[in-house]
Image (tube, rainbow, N blue to C red; front, top):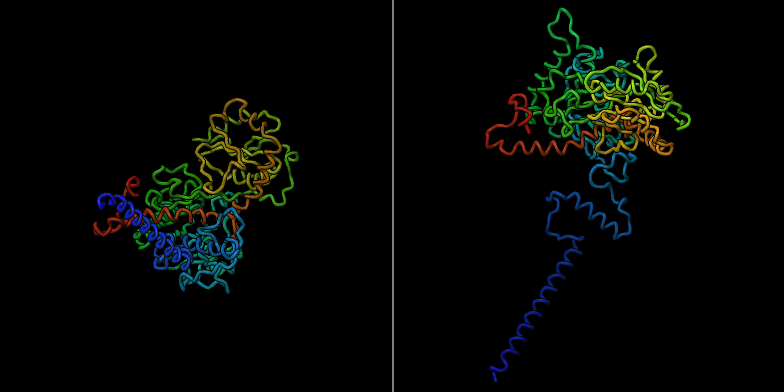
Length: 510
């Protein structure tokens, strides 16, 4: 009998064990659910402040709490990361101001908004005036390095000098960040402790130095421009900030294609602010580490533009130097292809003899404006066209454009390959095929984005100065990653990188 009942007992035992396991699992799950509910959705004993994504977790928790309370996510606070630079720059309600980074930073007038968490923190060297405002004939009093821009701003020379004046506007913006309020917030603030900085700014007016002092005189073996570059390299090599990073976190402005010709091969680990990469080998300057900045346009911005497709009689406009070297050969090819078209203006022009006024009138009365490669891939003509709301036609295969990681140029520019442009009738037929509706959409977009190319003091939310700082800020995570990787074996080797002192070839530097 016992033998006959044993299989049934085994089945009963297995059923009992299964039931017990199921009940235990259910109790365990219910207990964890209780812990999650009581801790706001996550275990109490986990310290999320120690996790790498703690900021993200905190934001998600806040959003979940808002949903439970019937509030929208926008009422919780700012989203994770930087706001889109293409959106309006209103301050988010309830954003707490950041405490001042350093007591030396100065005191904004009853407002700490300049020191908000999103701003790029910039340490600027107190270089002697001969490197910056001294080049504008400014003379300081005593040992003062910087002019008091609250009383008077040294003037920058006009004409074509202005198109490469980027370092002037960035330096003014950093100086003003210490005392000027900004209703739209700031993209960068100056700090006086380099350990707190995201980047180190080198305030050398390199384009002005080239334009004014690149020619020597019979009594000098070297031009003032070359001497200043040598002094700058020597100065940076002595600085602990350069030694600490090898220059990787330094920002050097060399916007004129011929500026910093003597120093660039020694300062190449730094982030360059350039007009293009036309005169740089790719291991010295490239889109991975450097920033392309717009030229300052020389024609006036077309305010209150009420023109339209039908009120701009010229189809295609170009005025400038026609015979150029290197990639600029295409200009003369196009001149011979287009010179007899009745609704095309293609002629030689310069800033002399009222050239800027004529160019302003010509662009404002044209539907499309040609931007053709010259001695270098870029030219100021593109930004004159944008300021005139004349749809740019870009024929420059190697051109790099400002802010292209966040801005879609195909919405307001026409791109044509050089090989296509020089085919007979290709370009003119292509431009004629663009109808009124498509042109009007591009013209409207030009009016929306033209502020991104405006240099002004004081800078305003979304202008060229702040857009450049934001472009620099987007490079910071990559800089930090490379710096951290470079320090992996520092202790093992018994030394750290020292930039110019222990110089490495660009190929092996990163």
